[in-house]
Length: 418
Image (cartoon, rainbow, N blue to C red):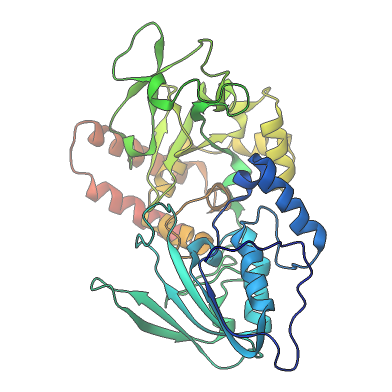
């Protein structure tokens, strides 16, 4: 039976036995950008905020967040709540207030970790299932995982205070590994030295050119007068390597000016590090090819390379994410060897640093990259690591084994992060 919930109606927490013994569900997964892009959903979003019934709303909250809080509000004392929700509940910034509320006001009985398993055919995110009781926090919680035989079994137990990685982001760590975002709190982060950006969205703009063309209409396997710029996606890169190059229509009536998210042209015309957005971090360098790339790739550009380039994207990024002003970051980046960063980001240590940022999520988000701690040794050591990275690049070009060089970088980088 289908039903509609008006989130703006006041839902007071039941008292003295009123409410439901069990609340169970599969809430809607609708991101903030999708809500804002739809007139109806955006109006609903404004009503949800305006009714002031939900204290879990934080920044770019997904629609399942108030849905979960409503389910908790409808419980009777000692009632049980469970919903299958996106795994990013455990680690994304928009879920911070909800995570804190659950851990501090309820008893978290169990979290079923389904990360990496495709549960819903049409969903792109992994899932988790929290089991929550409407009583004060106490005891340990179970953490279970899904196995190859499709059964879900307990793998460890934690006290609620052991679940969070740090007080700042309140990320939940569902593994036995020790993780903390505060491990290298005294270091600079990658965003201090580099501007971090997502690539362009290669589809027609929904407002001005809706349906006029698709991504496939703009891409060619061969170069010609129209498809005049080299183009890559995340599936085309690996550690230290671009595996495939295609060509994107460029400087035409429809591209880039009618793209859904064209970014800005200067982004693609300077040296940069390029990396994927899913799984293990794979980084290579675009030193002089000036590839165009879509939103499946993030790029990191030394601030000095963007000196003199001013636009809303850059100014907004500085305002929202940076603790230094732009001139300070441009000056700081003058001392950075880009190939040194390439080596560090491809090291085994980088995987651990990333896990400290994202927990066990399969996705990599710009804030994870931006907040990776980066130590800056003297020029001699930077050059040493950078030169090894350059040699790896040469071997990758010739399809030669580079495991010995990767181990050298791992050893050197490990000493930089005691």
